[in-house]
Length: 200
Image 1 (cartoon, rainbow, N blue to C red):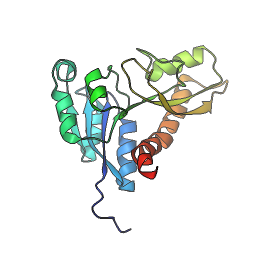
Image 2: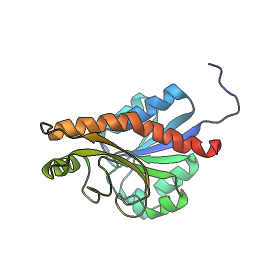
Image 3: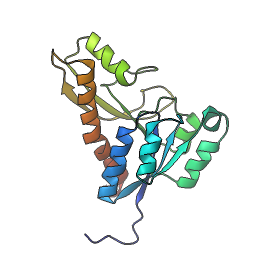
Image 4: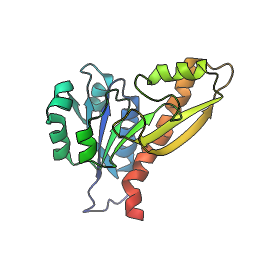
């Protein structure tokens, strides 16, 4: 396929705290597409597997601490230099700083493993969410992709999709269903956000 010259790729920066399977999926999706690229993965966890995944895919992998994110402008200045078109939180567990949200308005998004506004807020991530959903005997769950504001999981919704919960499902079954939704839809929603303004 012939590449269109003089069309710079859109730039994505990912923030993640843990395993990084979503980050890896997004990196690989855009490596195939060639329309955008993940230029860096940031993590607040020095031992997070996401850093190894990024490194293995030849994406810049950066670790930072609380001081660099909140008390100084170290992380903000790195982002300013990178000029990302979108900042993607994929399993990032810290509150995102207002100063970065303000500097990149409507360019910071997050994915949540439930149908917001239910099961959101501080401490509601990963298996904590799936356990709560199972305990409440919900008949469906899903994913929510939303803009990030200064409160956990309360930013404007961009996209939701659902999956049924069967009576026999365990917490692990629910987690697997959610992972499959994330892998299928998160890269596509990112792509749509990056390019929809150009189609208007």
